[in-house]
Length: 144
Image 1 (cartoon, rainbow, N blue to C red):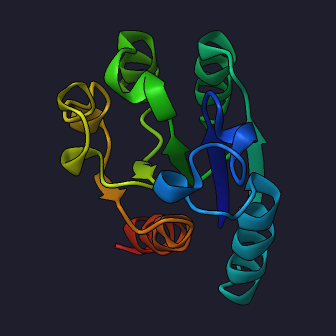
Image 2: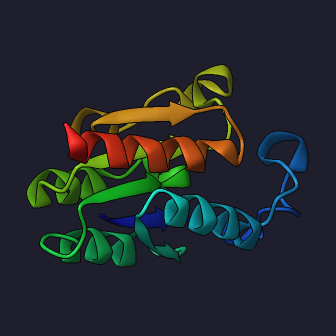
């Protein structure tokens, strides 16, 4: 089981950016937690972050045949990117949408996800634990 974790814009600032919203864990902290959990579950992961929409699209396109599932925190691109939506739909790789905060309890513009309709499911509002839940979802959707 190979899972690709993709992280979008500003997630490199976790731990210092609005900790009351996103928590105090850094992206490196979250990656270490996910790596341990995935290893315990017999899965391997590739964990990436970029502030570039085009790079995310390229990574999603390259996942076909290389990964069993994608866990995607598209961050702000969740609400704006038709390109990410189209890439997810085109590859056919099962994708789990995750968010640290509950996007439905925040500003109105965050309530709409352009990628939700092509993802297998959405996990939001559990802080860093959203990544563990995303790992479990990725493992379970490929076992069904």
